[in-house]
Amino acid sequence: LIVYFFLYASFLYSLPTNALAGIIIGADVLSKFVTAFMINTLDYARTEETSKTKVLYNPISLHKFMLMAVICIIPLYFLGTNFWAVIPMILITIGLRHYFKRKIGGYTGDCCGASVLLSEQAFYLGFFITTALPAKAREVDSATAAPSAAPLFLRQAPHRLLLPIPPRPYKDPPLCAR
Image (cartoon, rainbow, N blue to C red; front, top):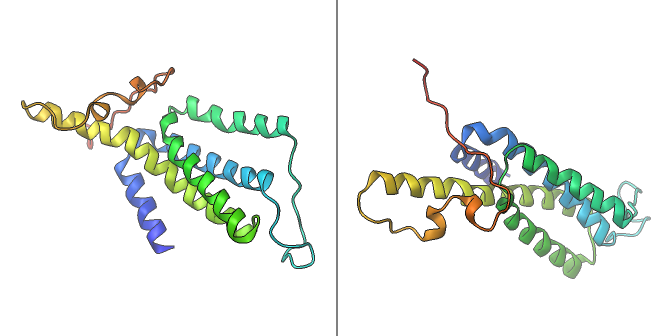
């Protein structure tokens, strides 16, 4: 848990400050959607008699699930969150789903909690990779006259990597106003 909070703080510290609200809201909303995905696609691992809370969730219909997905994705666009940041989150979710299915035959409440925490960290990692690293590569390019050693995909803006909707530009405000 301590490592989780250090990771959380280090990711948030390294991201652009004017985009933090969108990033945090996007990560929270999508990580909660991961729980809905687990509940909807896996069986509960325990029987009702051995369940701690005696509450079992039933999967929702496909059209409600898709509506939930759209509602979770819409804020990402309006808050200026990069859609490429979702890819590590999707990979972690699929990996966790297969792991839970293989190890315990379904999900429990602890599995849902772990998937929320891990998918949120994966989202922050994805956003860091797609936004902060290219910005740092551009800073290095502008500071040196020599050609960049960074790969081309790190030197390009993230919205030029097959993304049809360009994200809003992120600029850190000055540390002190004069």
